Image (cartoon, rainbow, N blue to C red):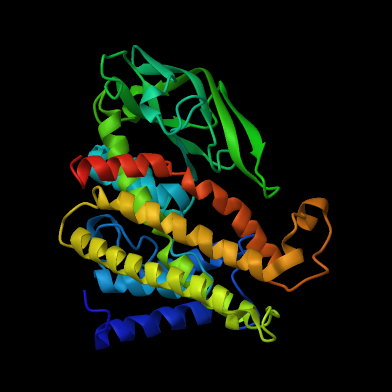
Length: 391
């Protein structure tokens, strides 16, 4: 794809910038802890942009790959979410488009679009993380309900979720990928318990979720019984494509240059002028630009009716590596101000160091999980070896 934007794409970019500026004027930035999400959702709804990647028939805007490219870059650069609705919007909805019944689509998609229901993902278990086919959470069909027993772990956002899309085992087959069924589980159902897991950055984002005789209506099954692995693979390709982090890394690169221009280096000038630092940052930028081209190629293929496929693993693998390296550059810039310290958790304000140090060190710490979330680096390499290199 030509990186030069057409006049129509430039006009679209200006419209995006104008919407963000009108919703969050100077001095009133997006605040996820305040009313930022409500204001942004209302602004998106006014333009029909709530679900950027959804098909037109389900409420999407019908953007071209170039418009998706512009949207991701501009929202990241200006500090607003590219979409509202979390996992329901970006992960479950594509599965409902492809595998859900008409009744399921009518039941669940409107609430996702309206941002009135939160979803979490029930995949990983103790002993079944990267080796997801080893999952043991059991669902037994009794009449018109499944009875679910088991445990999920590292479940992001489970403590605020209303529903979970969940992989369960409904039969034991010689091939472990068989006998897995995809269920939608109400998090308020009797027998569901959520136990917090506090992460290394001091925040509550992850959870352990247990199921004790949880009854799930059979109408909440997506696809046929035993076909959950096929459904899950479709979902993961969308998740991994979104984990290339290209827009984020580009924005981090810009801000690293600003930060390194203010920090003293070892050669008498700012850190950005140190040959070693500049060379490493330059190499990371070259790799990031190559990843950007791959992302654009993937967007074009999806727009033409294709699926992300195995190259989503390439995007995820390299994107994770680059974004982690970007966060490491910030730690290098912060120097002693990068020491682990959690004043927000302790109820104390940040009082020392540059303003960017605290949030970027948090990003560095939470970024360690990116090599595991959505499928570990080792899993991605196996997928690439099998489906791309045909080894």
